[in-house]
Amino acid sequence: MATLLSLPREIIHRVLYFAAPASRKQFRLASGLSGEIGRKWVFESVQISPVKKSCEGFKRILDDPNLARSVTKVYIDTRDPDRESSVDGYGNQNEDAMPSDDGEEGGDEFPRPFWSLVGRLGELPRLQSVALRFDPECDGEEDDWNEVEQSIEFRHSVLCKVFAVLANLPRLPTELAIQDLQNINPTDPDVKRDIEKVLGGLKSLRLNIANEHSDGNGEHDIEKEALHSFFPTLGSTWLAPAAANLEHLTLYSNLFIGFFPICDITNIHFPRLKTLALGNYTFMHDSQLDWITSHGSTLQELYLDDCPILYEVKLSAADTARTLLDKDRYKPHPRIVGDDLYASYDKRWCSYFGAFAEKLPHLRHFRFGHSPAWWQDETTPFEAETGITIGFDKESYMTYCEGYGPSQYMRSMIWDVEDEEEKERNFFPDYDCRVQPSEGDIAALRALLRRTGQEVELDEDGKNCNPPSIYH
Image 1 (cartoon, rainbow, N blue to C red):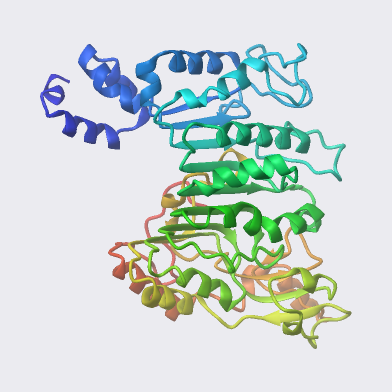
Image 2: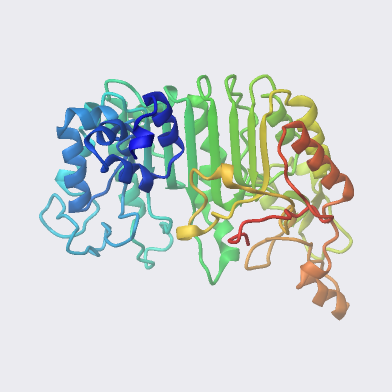
C-alpha cells in the first residue's frame, strides 16, 4: 500500500477507476490518506431502498458534506437488491422493512422516511445519474388473482413520485435508467410534464421494459392488451422528449418487440446519438436498418442483444394491423389452412453488417449476440450491454408463428400439413430450420469486427470460440 500511495494522485485515481467496488472499499480503509483519496470512488455510486439499514446509510451520506459531494449516481431500489427484504402491496415485509405512512406494514406507499430521503436528492451537488429499479415480476389488470410483489398501482405511484423529485432538482440529471419499467404510460398532465422535463435534459437513457409473463402459458403473454397500447406509443412518450440531447439509448424488453407488438421508433432521430443498445428487438423491415444507419454521422457504439431477423411470419388477418408491416405485405399461403396470412423478409445479417460497415463510419465498438446476463435475477441484462458474447446463436434467425407455444417466436415455421413426419419436424424446429447463418453472414460479421478493431474468434458456424462459462 505504501508503494501505491507514493504514486502521483492522478495515477492512484486511475487505478481506482478500474478497480472493483470491493477493492475500492478495502483501499479506503487502509489508512487516513487512502481513505481521503478513495472516498470519491467508494461513494461515487450509492443506493437507497425502503429498508431501515439502507435509509440510515443514505442519511449518513446526505448529512456529511464531504460524502455528499462524492456522489454522482444514485440507485433508487423499490426492493432490497439482495431480496432479503422487500416492500410490496401485500404486507410481505421482514423485520428490517420500515412501516408505511399509515403505520401499517405494507400498502402501496413507501415509508415516509424513505420518501423524505429521496426528496433530498437535491443535496447531492454532483448528482448526474439516477437509476430506478423495480421488481422484474409484474402483473396486469386482467390478473388480479396473481399476487406479485409490486402491483401496477404501486409502480405507477412510485414512478410519479420519483419523477416529481427529479423534475424539481436544482440541476436535472443527465443520465436516467429504469429497470423493469412495466408497460404503463402515466396520463396525468402534471406527471407527463415532469417526465418530459426530465427526459429533455438527458444525455443517457436506459429503459428495461418488464411485461406480464406466465411460465406455464407463455404463448398468451403477447395477447395482453397492455403491450399493444404501450409499445406503439413508447417512442412518443419516452424517446421523443429526449431526442435532441440524447447520446446513449438502451432499450430492452423481456418479450420480443419491434414486429409484434409493434415498436416502431424509426420516425425519431437522435442528432447526437453515440451509443445504441437493443435487446429482444426483432428486425422485419428495411426501415429499421435505415433508421440505425441514419445516425452514421454520430454513432460510435452499437449493441444488438438477442435481436433476431424474422424471415417468415404468419398470423391472423385481424392482427396484421398491429404489426410493423403494412397490411398489403401479407398474403395467403398454400401451406396455411384457414384465414391466417403470411409474409416474409429477404434481408439477411450479411446485408445488415455490410450496411453498418459502409454507413457507420465512426463505429468503434460493435457487439452482436447474446448476453450472459439474460435472466440473472430473473430479469433482462441491466447496464450490461458491453458484456454481450459476440457470435451467432440459435435465435439469430427466427419466425413468428401465431397460435403456438410456449412462444410464437421460434426458429422455423409450423405449417398446416397432413404428413406426420413433417408435423413432427415442425415441433422440433432445431432439426428443420430453413435459415441458418450463412458463410456470407459470418464473413460479414468478421469483416465488421476487423474494421472496428475487435479481435473475436468465431468458428465455422459463427459461434464464439471463447464464450464465458455462464454462456447459454
